[in-house]
Length: 356
Ligand code: OGA
Ligand code: NI
Image (cartoon, protein in one colour):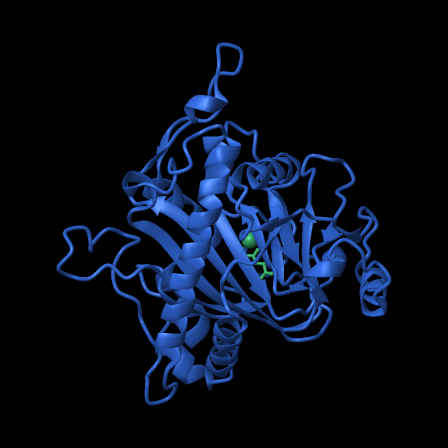
């Protein structure tokens, strides 16, 4: 992977490529610079110190880096290699594993439009969803977000499934470690989120993404339009090609967008809307988007949501007489269904749009 070293994490403002890109993409109402994000060391044995640092990051933007996460470079590199191989297949081969009703499989270019008010067409990216495998003999296997994955033909891509399953497992382990720190930072028991009721059977989704093209915000063309993630925690591994931007104040008249640089060995983490709801708006689920500069870009987000039936409601430590719950309680699966429907083409319209 390209990118800076964890050591120079907070510096590196003089990148030439960056400043050229900034100039190109600067739009009237935004000033673009690099964001300075907190770095959480998951190998630090002082959990309370890490939780304090994390709390600061979550109050500020909900975006931070984790290092010493234990996902080896080999596992990550393999996942990127196999992802590139999949996207390089002929379109007919990719369409054989088109995303199904269980949200597993291939999503073609323009499939998603997270910010229809500002986008003239869908995101300039193709993707592949890999969810949590819940086998047929499990009483819950027929729930909308549980079930079996769909996989490319192993004769075409040998070892592909195994590579993705390994990365999926590793990413979930990291998210559970972050969930412990999040609980501590909200004055809850360390195992509050990492418990059978919440993360015993999580809806965890690995998504491979491949971006192409040049974005032009002034014309409403984006790699990914502005959005916040739906769930609890997102891990984001990228190939080092710049593109991710965050906007800390979505209500500002002049929205200010900042690049989040990739750092060798570090993973970007952000909180999703469920975490904002749980914390009664205390922790931030920040608006972000992807701006492309013409280079191909690959990324691997991993989204963690709790169990299907988990109720997302204001945490006991985030409410008081003077701070009543701001969001109604909602079941995890109901919330996700609503959010997927708002931002994706319907399964039935893929065929019309892409196969006609
Ligand atoms: C996402 C996302 C950013 C990226 O998939 O939700 O924000 O860099 N991805 O691909
Ligand atoms: Ni996102």
